[in-house]
Structures are given as C-alpha cells and as structure tokens.
Image (tube, rainbow, N blue to C red; front, top):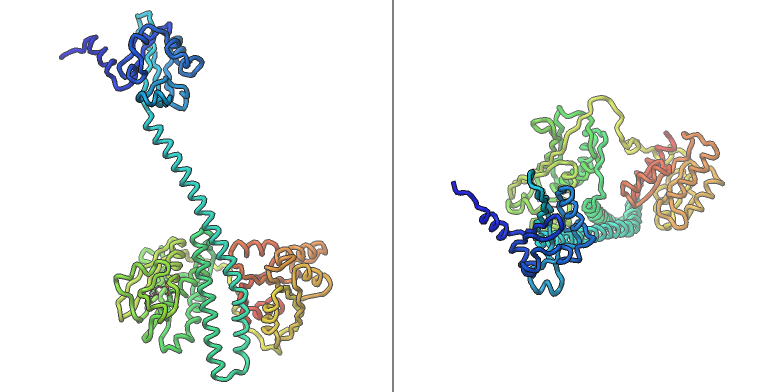
Length: 536
Ligand code: ADP
C-alpha cells in the first residue's frame, strides 16, 4: 500500500478548497495555503513568519483573535459563524470586491494542534466561504418578510371586505326588511286578483334578494374564517320535517312529490350544527326543486357502513347535470350554462357555500347525475348520536300555537326602535292584538320610559343612535339589580337585529338579552315570541 509522504500532506493543505492558516504560539503565521493567498490578495512572503496582528491589524480586539488566543493557551476548539464573526479576515472574492471592501462571508474553525510528546502547540484556522449561503439566507428572510407583509395586507383586505359586506348587508337588509314586512301586511288585506299577482312577484323578488345578500355574507364570513360551526344537540326528525315543510307548497304547485326518510339506526337526537345542516339541505332541496319539472324529490338520511358518518342523500328526477360540469358546479358563481340564471335564477353561490360548510364540519359532498334523468347530491358529516335523554337547545316558542287576537293576553310593550318604517311595520303586525305599544326612539328614551312605566316586555333594536340596544339592556339589567329584582321577574328583552353574527348574538346575551330575533322580523315569529314570554 502506498503511503502519503510529508510532501503529499503539505500539498493536501496547500491545495485544499478551504482557507488554511497555521499559527505558532507567538501568533506568527507559519503556514498559509493557496486559497488564503488568492483571497487575501497577499504574497506568501507578506504572510509567512509575520505576526497575524501585524498582517491583519483589524483583528485586534475581535472575537476571532480571542478565540485564536484561547486555542493556543487552553487548546480550545471554536467555531465562528458569520454572525459570531462580524469582523472576518479581509478576504475578497476578486479585486473589484476588494475595492468595494465587500468581504467574503466566512465560517471559521479554530482548531488546536498539539501532539502529546511534542512541546510546541499550534493553531489551525480553517476558513470556509459561506457567502452564497448567507446571500440565500438573506434573500429568504427578505422574501419571508415580504410574504408576511403580503399576508397581513391580504388579511386586512379580507377583513375590510368582510366588514364592508357585513355593513352593506345590514344597510340593504334594513330597507328590505321594510319592503318584506309591508308586503306581508299588504298580503293580508283585500286585494284584487291582479294586485295579488303583482304582490306575489314583489314578495318573491324581495325574498330572493334577501337570500342573495345572505349568501354573499356567508361566503365572506367563511372565507375570512369568521364563521364558527356549533356542536349542539338537536332532533334530526324535527329538522327534516321542518326543512321539508318549507318546500311543500312549492312542490304542490309544481306537481312534484317530496318526501324524506330517516334510517331507524340513527338516534332521535344527534349532535351537530343544526342551523348549518338545515342551510345545506335548503340549498340542495332548493336546487332539486328548481331543476325538477316533474317526478319527485326524496331526502334520505342514513348511517355510513362503519356507522361513523351521517349520510344525507338528496335525490331528484330533474334535468340532470352533464358529466363534464359535475366538478365545476361547486365553484363560486358557476352554473351549468349561461342560460341558467335567466331560466332558473340563482347566483351560483349555493353549492360553493354548501361545500365549504360541509368541509368545515369535517365532511364531504359528492354528486351523481345523468342528463334528463336526475341528480343525487350526497353529503356525509361525522355522526354523534345522543342516547340519553337530554334537553336539546330547541326553540320551543316556534312550536307554539298562536291564539287568536281575542284570546291573546293583553299586555304593554316598549318598542325601542329608531327607524320609523320598522316601528310602522311592527305596529301593523301587532295591530289586531290587545297589545299596547309604546315607542322609544333611542336607548336613552327607552331607559327613561322603562323607569317611569311598567312594561311586560321590551322589543329592543340593537342599532340605535345616542345609546344602542346593547348599552340600554346593560343599564336596564343594572337598574333591576340595584332594585333587587328577582332573576325570574326580570323584564324579557327581545333583541331585534340585522347583525346575525354569532359574536354579536353572544355579546347581547352576555349583557342580559332574553331572546334574539333576526331582521327581517316575520309577523308570526314576533307574535309567537311575545306570546311565549307573556303567557308562559
Ligand atoms: P345556483 O343554484 O344559485 O345557480 P348553485 O351553486 O346552487 O347555484 O348551483 C350551481 C349550478 O349547478 C346550478 O346553476 C345548476 O346549473 C347546477 N345544479 C345544482 N343542483 C342541480 C340539480 N339538482 N339539478 C340540476 N342542476 C343542478
């Protein structure tokens, strides 16, 4: 076997791809390799046998020199990265960089060289050029900062969009509330056949506009991460019955059969977000109804094979969907063809929202369809059945049978509402009932009326000038508390608000609201809720 000679070894050092300097105990340079000569732009004679501090006076007082001294004195090994080595050797890639004083970024190993029976100690300095890594690192850091800035800008923009949409939808909903309310009231009056037809168009268009506004608001809430999924107990039969009942009149008028079935192995009560599940079902059944001219719509609820998922199937015998469109219909603002809106209405947002909601519930949706035969939309969400008897969060008051105006208990109600139209609408809703209505135009007025008169209930608009509903409620509860009013005798306060964001509703309950009605307020809802609190 060939052995490396001393000459070979010295050539290894000379030609090494990293810089090597060897110093003796007196800090004199006794060896430097070609890499070092090339990058220091010095001659070997300038280096050899010279003190390192004479050749590189800028090293004095630096960490590098300190490490070299410790290496020679205590045989200490050090590594200096470019961050620990802010004053590296004045080494340059080329002369141009030397003129600009742009040093190579260096990574130093300071290695003690001592051999047991040899009295002399040495220090070897190995220098690696890490300029590329440093530049890459810097670039990455800059890109990260830019990306973060962009992300925060995007977040701000999305927040601004959500806020804008929330306030826009509020602004639009308030007058729309008046339109729908008045149309409902008008519907109860004597109308000619022609007027009745006009009114039907007015009501349907109003409702359609209301749905579009809700869709846009929902989408923006989902996209900005503001929409939360609830997990509460509910009766699955009630949910299906109630949802299907919304479509019965329409189905009858179109001559379509609509039915549902729930598999026996599903618990009566399940856990989930009933509001959102209903929203999904309304979207899917609404589509089935829209795109089916004859035949039937069938909703089937069953358990997945492994019993871990609740599976909903909405089957229709409608126009069907071409196979090349089956995927794209879940995208926002996408419809099968451009004539859809003209022929059937809609915005192309329903399925996109539906899919996003299902994904937020850790579920999935798919569709099978054949043109001319019909479509089946299938969605699955995790199943959590409740076996023990619990009391579900159920809006009992909605199930109440409303007595006729003659049998309705007489009562005195304070309505805090600044909008004259809304006051007018609510007055017309209640006009046939023995309800004495007193109006306050803002929170301050409501507060003073509450103190001077005995009311049975307060209807509190949440958005009012001077003092809003939230503050007025807080103060009313405070007054009751200081008077020592028993919790059961507190006056019921029903909030009326166009802001149906969960956070807002939560805050209202925290300040002492008893119940919450979303705008546009429907006559039947407000009457049932008043009856619930007055008579129960
Ligand atoms: P919209 O109904 O408001 O147009 P969707 O996102 O709910 O928006 O639906 C997107 C499109 O998918 C519809 O416009 C329609 O072309 C198609 N589609 C959805 N459901 C059905 C169905 N049950 N039968 C036939 N086509 C459907």
